[in-house]
Length: 282
Image (cartoon, rainbow, N blue to C red; front, side, top):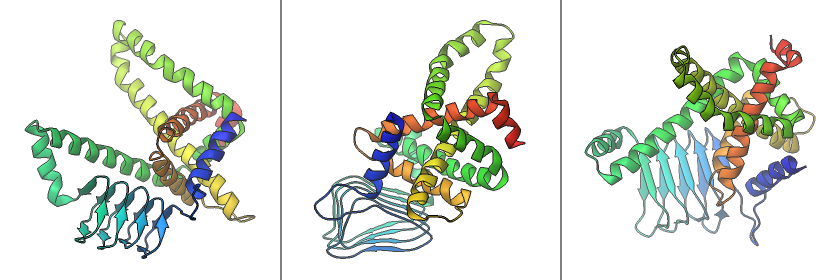
């Protein structure tokens, strides 16, 4: 019940934010988005489309592979992040958070600033690495959904059927990581296994996170589209975008993401060590 409650809270916060004026989160892929004058939204996330803000955005504006235009009447109470494009800001535009613009023209500047030891360089370099890692997750998610749909589906179903078991299984393994690597370090043969163990553990975390995103996307699409087959790739990308947006929710956002990562890892382990699930993926 607690697991279902957490998923329900995440869905409610994303789709039905509590406000006297009906505000919403806008997530689009491949299309331009315009927040007109008088409009009020919570977050705007667009991949491959320009964002034009002429109204109020309560939280964050994120554009990937395109630009952001803030007109003179734009109000953004959170951050404005633009990856692969530019931010055009009108003279009267109000941005209460930070403005981050990552493209080919400023990546080299940020890296040079990092190697010079400047505080701004460290922050910018961390943001670049974090965003590139998130982009890598999306690429791996698309490849997994296209090339290995059966294992991904099996892990997603394992999490869905055994939510509590998946979480505690993932939590147990997470707590055992440090003692496990200490044992490898102090043993002669174990030193040579450290790279293999680290790679396997990292891939398990990533695959589990992708499967948790696919499950979240499945839950959302099931509520929106009834009785229609939902493509796994659409479920996965939608779920990962929602997890990204959930991370911006104050206080509980990171808890929900930790829960997703832990449950995903548990789901991977349940499939690996469950003969029935393992045979279903072959």
